[in-house]
Length: 240
Picture 1: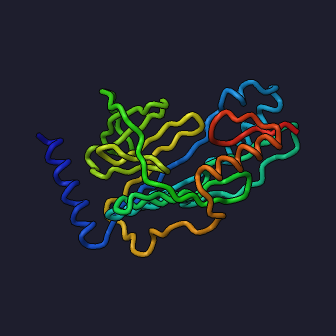
Picture 2 (picture 1 turned 180 degrees about the horizontal axis):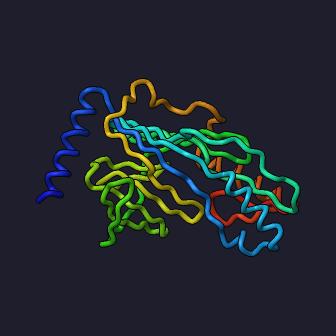
């Protein structure tokens, strides 16, 4: 009964905030994973690559108001990776801001190939999730577990009835507060349900406008030119 009352009170709070032009801000911590590709490296090179991966960790935030949202860098420490090794890492996909508009059913993703930015506008789509029985507390909120067909794990909060989440993810009956993909883990640190989002949610406009198909072709050709294995999204290791 207490839990139902809490959900009802949160729903009222969110609805009231939206009516007064307020929104929701969630600060997430993004941490890169040590992939199988890294684990197979020579120990000395692996240590350097792991250091470079650590420098890819950053703080992101999701701003959500009514049917619009923006996921972008909140604050991050600029650092220069140690390039004095036989390998370095390069980003091939993701890495930029993601704008969603549920009313217009569109998404604008800012994605990177090395240091070059691209803007991709495409229909808003959600993963097909399977909700499981597991539960845990994240940032003070009770969350439930869901897994999509590719094995990506999301922990969402039914108490916050917003079908959204970090990056391109959403489509669950509650806000996603934790996400685990093959290349990174994203965890909510703070949740503000009464945040002034006025003039803060804007479409990303920095980058070359391309279709998803064109972007994939450019990425694949660049990886082929550099002799990099195409084993999925995320950072890649370049042998020097």
